[in-house]
Image 1 (tube, rainbow, N blue to C red):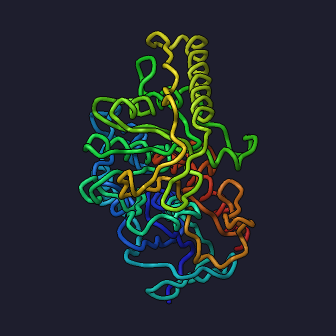
Image 2 (image 1 turned 90 degrees about the vertical axis):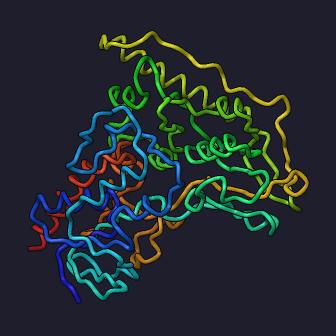
Image 3 (image 1 turned 45 degrees about the vertical axis):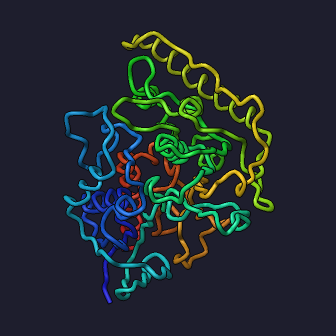
Length: 405
């Protein structure tokens, strides 16, 4: 049995940011990691993936990017190497089995033994498990099912066509890779966003950062739960700074269809909402560009002339069904989102949908969570954004420990 003040569960970028924040405040702690630091980055990403955020946004806590290409996009392999140089009290190869107790007396049971602690930080992230629709089980047995966690490259798939379900970042990137590899690819499009890679001479994320899109605190957001369900930004990090949207995919041969609504008797059935979903994405894009233009005009920032993108092109008759057998679809990749895995947390802190309840990362006395969407601001989803969240939550834990002393 071990004893420490704080246990951090997860040694990804959020967990290590919290470790650094606790160290700065002199709080004794251990970080528990089922694999190696950055485990999900190491083992649950496809081979060609590069980060979709530019390098200046990808520094780990206390270690900002110091390379020569701040506006480039590092590979996942390059990012993982940053974890190798990290010095933190990490217990690797340690799986958490349960967390019970309360502030001042938490019991963290692991496969390496019991750890007693006063406070706990959950930093296992928002993307531990793929979120699949209930009708996934209705697919024919001959169709291979994968997710972005298990997909590696086109050569690993069975011969034949591929249905990619979901048009957020992962779905768009995988559909692009499959089409460029010569695979027939159909993309089922649900609620999604649209962004250019560059706008007015700079990366779109540079403008969004400067304008303050990422800064609004969680407690000033209307309908926070809806905002936390916003699809991921549809970007790709390539040396040629490509814009990745439905028009770009159709130009390389990807067929787009509406939201996948059901699978019945070997047929994928799509909704007729494709036009409405694309129109909504185009409108949101133009509102964002208007915001940036207004900010540039007000501040006099140096920028190229404004521009607008053509509306999303739609098929003449978007298909409503796809017979997987007769049309040779041998693989379905579910890019339908993720959910956290908190099954080992045996405490009454979940809502009726099984989601952990928290107020800006504070779950209960002595218990915090890191790495969830819009935890404290939109920066919470960014690698570099973990430092600010960790600092705020470490201050909260420090006060809790002082009050209990």
